[in-house]
Image 1 (cartoon, rainbow, N blue to C red):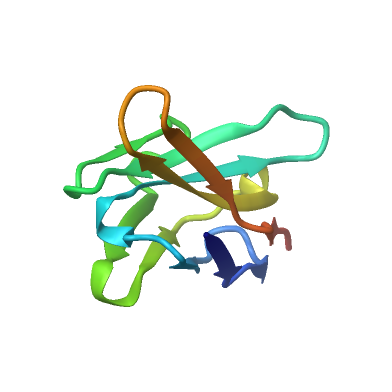
Image 2: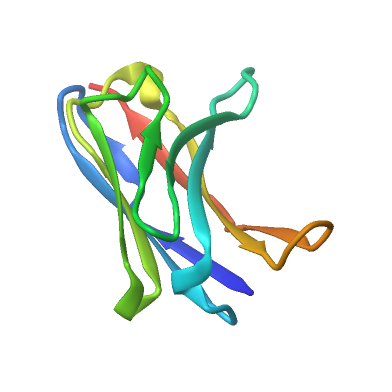
Length: 119
């Protein structure tokens, strides 16, 4: 399984970015997808989740500002980030979860993409 992220960059506070994560080597439509982030000096944080059937969940810090979505035809998951704040600055990682049953769950991480929110 390979995950390739894109879309990070430098944005001013209040701005928007869209992160993309393209997956290969998996039956993407069966997989749950997560976005994590790690800010300097902080622990890794789960930002958003979308299940294989499209259910979503968000960390309280991003609710109402971030939207996770997926396009199974393109094997891609997105994270639309609006009203960005300096505290959103972090490296963002997409994570794919394959579940073939008890004891056969696998997790794959992308390489990460830097998001910097600064004026």
